[in-house]
Figure 1 (cartoon, rainbow, N blue to C red):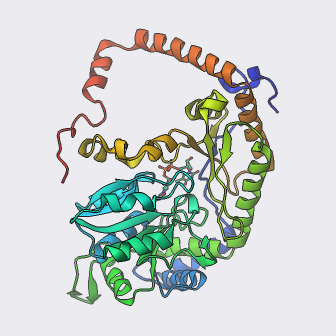
Figure 2 (figure 1 turned 90 degrees about the vertical axis):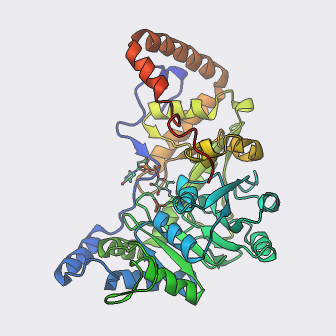
Figure 3 (figure 1 turned 30 degrees about the vertical axis):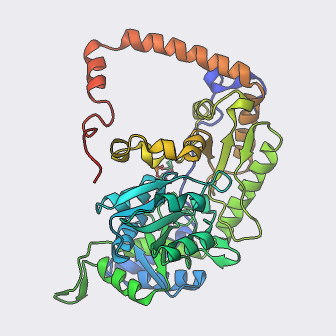
Length: 434
Ligand code: T4K
């Protein structure tokens, strides 16, 4: 256990962990059960195209969430693209910038402009009070993101969407197994999209699903994810290949059998972090409403640098040196990534809370790959760094100054020129908004 500053790896101590601790180590579940299902799939020689395992997974998910339709897909990004298209969204759609880039890209991919909306700093979700200012004659919809599994203000969003006759879709990539006022996330808006990527607590290797209670929308999306085929030799819509394969469904079915245990592990980790970080000034852990169903899959801290002296980025650097692969989800915000940064260079002016929060939050490792001992050490490192904040800051600054000196000395001229030429965004900075 690290007790003094010089124990920290960035100051020359031995890293706390020999192997990297990742935020998104996949849950594997009952390996024997999974391999049994895989063997059966191989025996049956039915590998994809709406096979029996996919259909079974869809039934089970629809039951669990209390929705009429679940359509499994190859990932959440394609699921978002298909849903957006099936809902008929065009022109402009209002989305938070504080999200994974896929939410925005799913729109821009089909030449729909994502109009970035600020977040409510208390919930970190899209701020309903900011939405109406962004509505123009081109606006056709709103996409809310249940960030870190915490439900958006679904009542206010429904009311705004209805009043302005806008489509309402939720990116529920983080929210599988979560509820809002006792109702499972999955039945809000016209449709909701889940991610079952390997790093999600419930995964299908790669995968995702759209759930909806709208029969027509569901029928359309089923066709769209299979090229628009309505039967052999008959295509009735534009479509793409969004199908989930049978191996992925087998992983999903295996993990569904263990879902409660996976949540219990995440909850145990979450509570331990809470207990051990409690009372460190300037560190606030993002909390979950334990009266709801939660998956507790993200451990997120908000760092108030004015109190801790160490910034969020300092803390990430300290943790990385210890082989704790903390992540800055979702820095720097979609509006500061391409192509949006070039399209809307001043978007940040309308997103003050997003700009503030993306500088302050950090996600820490959790899930079945880590246990109480690891969490104990992670918390101790954070405590040690923050309680000696000023000194840590000074040492980091000194190191950075030293590194700058060596970088400048070591970098050959051609390299420096290359870097200048290939500044991120330099090639597309002249593009105009669509
Ligand atoms: N909407 C939202 C709000 C989302 O957060 C996401 C995805 C989507 C839509 C789109 O869903 P998908 O189309 O992916 O279904 C990761 C995930 O790839 C991504 O699915 C997720 N959100 C996002 C929050 O996190 P990266 O770029 O951070 O992934 P990566 O490769 O850095 O992995 C994260 C950590 O997990 C690393 O520390 C390494 C570890 N890892 C990863 C994989 C793949 C493992 O230990 N084993 C593995 O197999 O995006």
